[in-house]
Image (cartoon, rainbow, N blue to C red):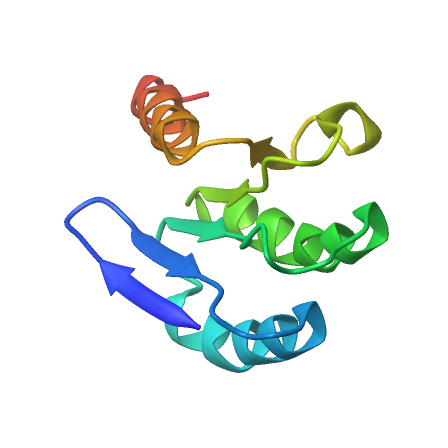
Amino acid sequence: MKIEQNSEYIFISSDENSFEDFAANFKEKHSEIKEKHVIVSISANLNIVEKDIFVFLDYAELHQQNGTTFVLVCPRVDVDNFPETFNIVPTLQEAEDILEMENIQRDLGF
């Protein structure tokens, strides 16, 4: 797992050989980043199914409660199969757009 931080968010990408390893590594590191905006990119090399992605739903809900943004970048999933509050997008640019929109909403008190 690669972790990069910039002024806006923490970017996490997978370099593991299996989704299970990536999810376990993420779970271990999440306590260090739970108060920050997070964008997680799932590598196209990992063979995942939609049920695997639900592993991240609890993290997304925790970030929403904390007033931070959690976005999952995963290009090969049908976002209609997930709750509306679960931010899943196909590209990093769209993830950054979600982060910006949620920051604006928080600034406006929504």
